[in-house]
Image (cartoon, rainbow, N blue to C red; front, side, top):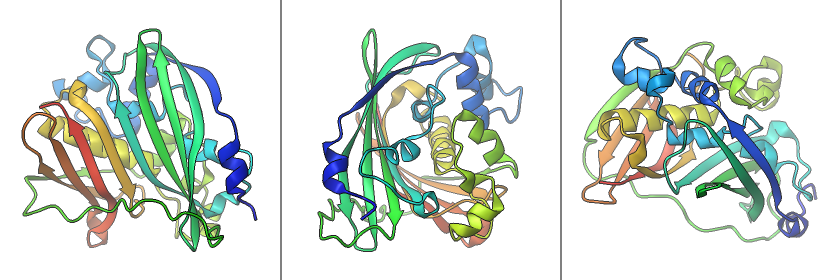
Length: 289
Protein backbone atom coordinates (compact mmCIF):
# COMPACT_ATOMS: atom_id res chain seq x y z
CA UNK A 1 0.00 0.00 0.00
CA UNK A 2 1.48 3.39 -0.99
CA UNK A 3 0.53 4.85 2.40
CA UNK A 4 1.89 2.99 5.41
CA UNK A 5 -0.02 4.73 8.19
CA UNK A 6 1.99 3.18 11.02
CA UNK A 7 5.31 4.13 9.46
CA UNK A 8 4.13 7.66 8.64
CA UNK A 9 2.85 8.32 12.16
CA UNK A 10 6.02 6.90 13.72
CA UNK A 11 8.26 9.23 11.71
CA UNK A 12 10.06 11.81 13.83
CA UNK A 13 9.35 15.53 13.53
CA UNK A 14 11.22 17.64 11.01
CA UNK A 15 12.69 20.90 12.19
CA UNK A 16 14.23 23.89 10.49
CA UNK A 17 14.57 27.65 10.46
CA UNK A 18 12.68 30.07 8.25
CA UNK A 19 13.10 33.78 7.69
CA UNK A 20 11.02 36.43 5.99
CA UNK A 21 11.27 40.13 5.20
CA UNK A 22 8.80 42.87 4.21
CA UNK A 23 9.14 42.00 0.53
CA UNK A 24 7.94 38.44 1.19
CA UNK A 25 4.89 39.77 3.01
CA UNK A 26 4.14 42.23 0.21
CA UNK A 27 4.45 39.52 -2.46
CA UNK A 28 2.03 37.30 -0.56
CA UNK A 29 -0.46 40.13 -0.21
CA UNK A 30 -0.25 40.90 -3.93
CA UNK A 31 -0.68 37.19 -4.64
CA UNK A 32 -4.04 37.18 -2.85
CA UNK A 33 -5.31 40.30 -4.61
CA UNK A 34 -4.21 43.16 -2.34
CA UNK A 35 -3.37 46.54 -3.83
CA UNK A 36 -6.61 47.31 -5.68
CA UNK A 37 -7.11 50.26 -5.83
CA UNK A 38 -3.36 50.81 -5.60
CA UNK A 39 -3.56 54.13 -3.71
CA UNK A 40 -6.36 53.16 -1.32
CA UNK A 41 -5.08 53.72 2.24
CA UNK A 42 -6.73 50.45 3.30
CA UNK A 43 -4.74 48.58 0.65
CA UNK A 44 -1.47 50.38 1.42
CA UNK A 45 -1.50 48.57 4.77
CA UNK A 46 -0.75 45.44 2.76
CA UNK A 47 1.62 46.86 0.15
CA UNK A 48 3.66 49.78 1.53
CA UNK A 49 6.64 49.08 3.79
CA UNK A 50 6.06 52.04 6.09
CA UNK A 51 2.46 50.95 6.84
CA UNK A 52 2.78 47.19 6.51
CA UNK A 53 0.57 44.87 8.53
CA UNK A 54 0.81 41.08 8.12
CA UNK A 55 -2.35 39.17 7.26
CA UNK A 56 -2.25 36.08 9.52
CA UNK A 57 -2.64 33.64 6.62
CA UNK A 58 0.88 34.67 5.55
CA UNK A 59 1.94 31.96 8.01
CA UNK A 60 1.03 29.34 5.38
CA UNK A 61 3.82 30.58 3.08
CA UNK A 62 6.32 32.16 5.51
CA UNK A 63 9.84 31.12 4.64
CA UNK A 64 9.03 30.52 0.98
CA UNK A 65 9.20 26.74 1.22
CA UNK A 66 6.63 24.28 -0.11
CA UNK A 67 3.23 24.30 1.62
CA UNK A 68 2.12 21.63 4.06
CA UNK A 69 0.39 19.65 1.32
CA UNK A 70 3.68 19.08 -0.47
CA UNK A 71 5.71 18.58 2.71
CA UNK A 72 3.32 15.87 3.89
CA UNK A 73 4.14 13.81 0.80
CA UNK A 74 7.81 13.52 1.81
CA UNK A 75 7.03 11.84 5.15
CA UNK A 76 8.32 8.24 5.35
CA UNK A 77 5.51 5.83 4.55
CA UNK A 78 3.81 8.19 2.09
CA UNK A 79 4.40 7.34 -1.58
CA UNK A 80 1.56 8.65 -3.73
CA UNK A 81 0.88 10.19 -7.14
CA UNK A 82 0.77 13.99 -6.87
CA UNK A 83 -2.07 14.02 -9.43
CA UNK A 84 -4.27 12.26 -6.85
CA UNK A 85 -3.54 14.79 -4.11
CA UNK A 86 -5.81 17.66 -3.14
CA UNK A 87 -5.72 20.15 -0.29
CA UNK A 88 -8.65 19.11 1.88
CA UNK A 89 -8.58 21.81 4.53
CA UNK A 90 -6.49 24.19 6.60
CA UNK A 91 -6.54 25.22 10.25
CA UNK A 92 -4.46 28.08 11.60
CA UNK A 93 -4.07 29.15 15.23
CA UNK A 94 -2.34 32.48 15.93
CA UNK A 95 -0.52 32.84 19.23
CA UNK A 96 0.24 36.52 18.58
CA UNK A 97 0.40 38.91 15.61
CA UNK A 98 3.03 38.09 12.99
CA UNK A 99 5.98 40.48 12.67
CA UNK A 100 6.78 42.14 9.36
CA UNK A 101 10.30 40.71 9.52
CA UNK A 102 11.17 37.51 11.34
CA UNK A 103 13.15 34.35 11.93
CA UNK A 104 11.37 31.32 13.33
CA UNK A 105 12.09 27.73 14.27
CA UNK A 106 9.52 25.39 12.74
CA UNK A 107 8.64 21.80 13.61
CA UNK A 108 6.43 19.65 11.37
CA UNK A 109 5.06 16.18 11.99
CA UNK A 110 2.25 13.98 10.75
CA UNK A 111 -0.36 13.78 13.52
CA UNK A 112 -3.05 11.66 11.85
CA UNK A 113 -3.77 9.39 8.90
CA UNK A 114 -7.50 8.83 8.36
CA UNK A 115 -9.19 6.17 6.22
CA UNK A 116 -12.14 7.70 4.36
CA UNK A 117 -12.86 4.55 2.36
CA UNK A 118 -12.15 5.86 -1.12
CA UNK A 119 -9.38 8.19 0.03
CA UNK A 120 -6.88 8.83 2.79
CA UNK A 121 -6.47 12.09 4.70
CA UNK A 122 -3.11 13.08 6.13
CA UNK A 123 -2.85 15.80 8.78
CA UNK A 124 0.47 17.64 8.91
CA UNK A 125 0.94 19.93 11.91
CA UNK A 126 3.49 22.72 11.87
CA UNK A 127 4.45 24.81 14.89
CA UNK A 128 6.47 28.01 14.56
CA UNK A 129 8.20 30.01 17.30
CA UNK A 130 10.72 32.82 17.44
CA UNK A 131 12.93 34.14 20.23
CA UNK A 132 9.87 35.61 21.97
CA UNK A 133 7.86 32.39 21.98
CA UNK A 134 5.19 30.60 19.90
CA UNK A 135 3.90 32.34 16.77
CA UNK A 136 1.46 29.98 15.08
CA UNK A 137 0.26 26.40 14.74
CA UNK A 138 -1.19 25.15 11.48
CA UNK A 139 -2.76 21.88 10.36
CA UNK A 140 -2.81 21.03 6.65
CA UNK A 141 -5.32 18.31 5.70
CA UNK A 142 -4.12 16.42 2.63
CA UNK A 143 -6.72 14.42 0.68
CA UNK A 144 -5.28 11.52 -1.34
CA UNK A 145 -7.76 9.93 -3.72
CA UNK A 146 -7.79 6.15 -4.06
CA UNK A 147 -5.70 5.47 -0.94
CA UNK A 148 -8.37 4.51 1.62
CA UNK A 149 -9.98 1.20 2.43
CA UNK A 150 -7.50 -0.38 4.83
CA UNK A 151 -9.89 -0.32 7.79
CA UNK A 152 -8.27 2.54 9.66
CA UNK A 153 -9.75 5.33 11.79
CA UNK A 154 -12.13 7.52 9.77
CA UNK A 155 -11.34 10.53 11.94
CA UNK A 156 -13.63 12.98 13.73
CA UNK A 157 -16.73 14.52 12.19
CA UNK A 158 -15.86 18.12 11.34
CA UNK A 159 -18.79 19.26 9.19
CA UNK A 160 -20.73 22.21 10.59
CA UNK A 161 -24.43 22.80 10.22
CA UNK A 162 -25.49 25.65 7.93
CA UNK A 163 -25.31 29.15 9.45
CA UNK A 164 -28.60 30.47 10.78
CA UNK A 165 -30.45 33.11 8.81
CA UNK A 166 -29.28 35.37 6.01
CA UNK A 167 -25.63 36.44 5.94
CA UNK A 168 -24.72 39.72 7.60
CA UNK A 169 -22.59 40.66 4.63
CA UNK A 170 -21.89 39.37 1.13
CA UNK A 171 -18.95 40.62 -0.91
CA UNK A 172 -17.44 39.60 -4.23
CA UNK A 173 -13.75 39.41 -4.94
CA UNK A 174 -12.52 38.82 -8.51
CA UNK A 175 -9.49 36.68 -9.23
CA UNK A 176 -7.13 37.45 -12.07
CA UNK A 177 -6.53 35.17 -15.02
CA UNK A 178 -2.87 35.09 -13.97
CA UNK A 179 -3.63 34.81 -10.23
CA UNK A 180 -2.09 31.33 -9.90
CA UNK A 181 1.05 32.42 -11.77
CA UNK A 182 1.54 35.23 -9.28
CA UNK A 183 0.58 33.26 -6.16
CA UNK A 184 2.94 30.37 -6.96
CA UNK A 185 5.88 32.77 -6.48
CA UNK A 186 5.21 32.53 -2.74
CA UNK A 187 6.60 28.98 -2.84
CA UNK A 188 3.99 26.52 -4.16
CA UNK A 189 5.35 24.72 -7.24
CA UNK A 190 2.47 22.25 -7.72
CA UNK A 191 1.93 21.91 -11.51
CA UNK A 192 -1.81 21.47 -10.92
CA UNK A 193 -2.03 25.26 -10.85
CA UNK A 194 -0.15 26.04 -14.07
CA UNK A 195 0.16 23.05 -16.43
CA UNK A 196 -2.96 22.13 -18.46
CA UNK A 197 -1.72 18.57 -19.08
CA UNK A 198 -1.16 17.89 -15.40
CA UNK A 199 -4.53 19.45 -14.50
CA UNK A 200 -6.23 17.14 -17.02
CA UNK A 201 -4.50 14.10 -15.49
CA UNK A 202 -5.83 15.23 -12.10
CA UNK A 203 -9.37 15.41 -13.53
CA UNK A 204 -9.79 19.15 -14.15
CA UNK A 205 -10.63 21.01 -17.35
CA UNK A 206 -7.79 23.45 -16.79
CA UNK A 207 -5.39 24.53 -14.03
CA UNK A 208 -7.07 25.50 -10.77
CA UNK A 209 -6.22 28.27 -8.32
CA UNK A 210 -4.30 27.33 -5.19
CA UNK A 211 -6.68 26.60 -2.33
CA UNK A 212 -4.47 28.65 -0.03
CA UNK A 213 -4.84 31.63 -2.36
CA UNK A 214 -8.63 31.46 -1.95
CA UNK A 215 -8.04 30.94 1.78
CA UNK A 216 -5.98 34.15 1.98
CA UNK A 217 -8.38 36.18 -0.16
CA UNK A 218 -11.27 35.12 2.06
CA UNK A 219 -9.51 36.06 5.28
CA UNK A 220 -8.57 39.45 3.83
CA UNK A 221 -12.22 40.07 2.96
CA UNK A 222 -13.31 39.25 6.52
CA UNK A 223 -10.58 41.42 8.09
CA UNK A 224 -11.27 44.35 5.78
CA UNK A 225 -15.04 44.35 6.18
CA UNK A 226 -15.97 42.93 9.60
CA UNK A 227 -12.80 43.42 11.66
CA UNK A 228 -12.12 47.06 10.76
CA UNK A 229 -8.93 46.10 8.93
CA UNK A 230 -7.27 45.00 12.19
CA UNK A 231 -5.18 41.90 11.40
CA UNK A 232 -4.20 41.60 15.07
CA UNK A 233 -7.74 40.61 16.08
CA UNK A 234 -7.57 37.26 14.27
CA UNK A 235 -6.95 34.31 16.60
CA UNK A 236 -7.84 31.35 14.43
CA UNK A 237 -8.99 30.43 10.94
CA UNK A 238 -10.36 27.10 9.76
CA UNK A 239 -11.66 26.14 6.31
CA UNK A 240 -12.56 23.05 4.33
CA UNK A 241 -11.81 23.17 0.61
CA UNK A 242 -15.14 22.07 -0.85
CA UNK A 243 -14.41 22.87 -4.50
CA UNK A 244 -12.02 24.58 -6.88
CA UNK A 245 -11.66 28.07 -8.30
CA UNK A 246 -10.51 28.65 -11.84
CA UNK A 247 -8.33 31.75 -12.27
CA UNK A 248 -10.45 34.62 -13.56
CA UNK A 249 -13.56 33.63 -11.60
CA UNK A 250 -15.18 35.79 -8.93
CA UNK A 251 -15.42 34.64 -5.32
CA UNK A 252 -18.76 35.27 -3.61
CA UNK A 253 -18.02 35.49 0.12
CA UNK A 254 -20.91 35.31 2.59
CA UNK A 255 -20.32 36.15 6.25
CA UNK A 256 -22.31 35.60 9.42
CA UNK A 257 -21.02 37.70 12.32
CA UNK A 258 -20.56 36.27 15.80
CA UNK A 259 -21.15 38.29 18.95
CA UNK A 260 -19.25 39.18 22.11
CA UNK A 261 -15.62 38.84 22.98
CA UNK A 262 -14.06 35.79 21.43
CA UNK A 263 -16.78 35.63 18.78
CA UNK A 264 -16.35 34.17 15.36
CA UNK A 265 -17.34 34.80 11.77
CA UNK A 266 -18.92 31.94 9.84
CA UNK A 267 -18.03 32.12 6.16
CA UNK A 268 -19.14 30.38 2.98
CA UNK A 269 -17.38 30.98 -0.34
CA UNK A 270 -18.67 30.07 -3.80
CA UNK A 271 -17.78 30.63 -7.44
CA UNK A 272 -20.20 33.31 -8.65
CA UNK A 273 -20.03 32.40 -12.36
CA UNK A 274 -20.74 28.69 -11.77
CA UNK A 275 -24.11 29.02 -10.06
CA UNK A 276 -22.49 29.49 -6.65
CA UNK A 277 -20.56 26.22 -6.77
CA UNK A 278 -19.12 25.74 -3.24
CA UNK A 279 -15.45 26.62 -2.78
CA UNK A 280 -14.88 26.99 0.99
CA UNK A 281 -17.18 25.38 3.54
CA UNK A 282 -17.18 24.83 7.31
CA UNK A 283 -15.20 28.03 7.53
CA UNK A 284 -14.74 30.02 10.73
CA UNK A 285 -12.59 33.07 11.53
CA UNK A 286 -12.09 33.43 15.29
CA UNK A 287 -11.29 36.89 16.56
CA UNK A 288 -10.96 39.10 19.60
CA UNK A 289 -14.02 41.25 20.10
